[in-house]
Amino acid sequence: MRTYSVVLSLSVVLTVAALVTPLAQSRGSGKQPAQSHTGWSAYLGSADSAQYSALAQVNRQTVSKLEVAWTFPSGNRNFMFGPLVADGLIFVLAGANDLVALNAATGAKVWSRAHPGAVGTRGINYWRSADGKDQRLLYLASGYLNAANAKTGEPIPAFGDNGRVDLRVGLRASGLALPDLNPLQTSNPGRVFEDLFIIGLPAQGTGYDSNPGDVHAYDVRTGMLRWVFHSLPRDGEPGAETWPKDAWKNHGGVHNWSELTIDEGRAIAYVPFGTGRFDFYGGDRPGNNLYANSLVALDARTGRRLWHFQIVHHDVWDYDLPTAPRLLTIRRNGRTQDVVAQPTKQGFVFVFDRVTGQPVWPIEERAVPQSDVPGERTPPTQPFPTRPAPSRGSRSRRRTSTRICLRKSARPSGRDCAATATKACSPHPASREPSRSPVTAAARTGAVRPRIPPAANSTCCRRTCRRCSASCLPEAARQARRAQAWPRFCRARTWSA
Image: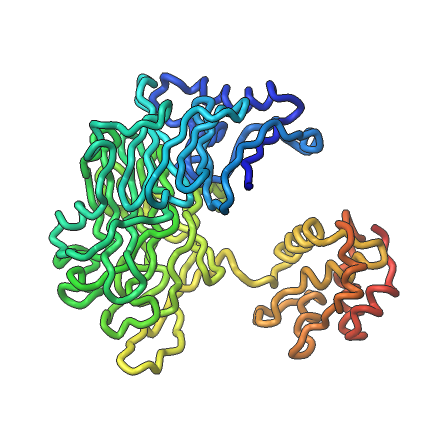
């Protein structure tokens, strides 16, 4: 039997105050408390996908004093679900497909609601009216958008059809003939913005026959469809020229299957889209295929496209955008700038001005190898960001990597610290950036990198290394390059630690 466990810092009373008080203080404001980062009433913590909490009660001094306060049995299965905390309740999944509300202080079950099919695996959404009297949970279950009373778990009768909305209705209303389309279930929990619930539809199936992944916004009170953004443009819309004529009628994909991010202050939704179907062949969809593999900024109130950037043209590698964009503020040329950063499967990070969509650093179109698959026509170039660089050649990056590696590596004794750290911090041999770093040079010696056998490695990786001398990594790399014998080097060399 699996359980949810909650740990409390110092005492039950202190942790309950940390979880409940910030949310209680926001009551009556009519605004979601997420932007203060003192609650967790949205997936990833807040609408900006920050995955950050400003609460300071659990810190380096108090973390060792955490104790289990209560547990709740979740059933004999695994869950990939992000619980929410709002108004003194924790919302979790348990049992078969039961949405459960627990008292945050005691772990006692307040209510439970069963579902005949799957509930969105990543999480759910919480909404509260301006006067604080109406509190709702909005989430996907069995392909339907559900609205439930957050206090009781009961469906909201006035929302859609007795508390739920069929997501296929919006697709059919736009003119698509989808007689055999199954209910549209996705792990993307969507986002609540003001009185709207925004969700990217899933592209059902992975083959050629798939629906477009349009973005829908529903009224949180009534379930009415308020606006639609066509991820696969209709004829005459911007971007339609990058597809064959009438492609929207018989092509699919281009869906936001992962997550989306909202800048609540600017009312902008940043939506990272996936690949057009089929993921690994595009002979039947010549062109760059907007808005596939694109970061698109939408007016969160109307769905109007503000700007976009396509990160992969005519994708045939399944290089869809896998994670929520991050909202950051950077200092550049003596001033601060609000930016949105989009990580990718390729290891690149594309950074844009949040409002204009202009790249913060130059993005180059570089020539790339072409496909030799019959019928395939891949683009001659693809975008490459110039910064932040994925290489490990710069001095500042080497220092950062060293600190990270030493924190995360196992803690060896003083004599073994350098060998373990050198192996952990050596750049990938495929890196082509020139560097004077001995660490980089060591990694390039020979086709096969020296390796610590398990017997010797077990000695080096027993405890976490707190710190090594400043010359540890360069000298260790030189020794390893000369000897090509990690076990002997690991045992023989001594360092201050």
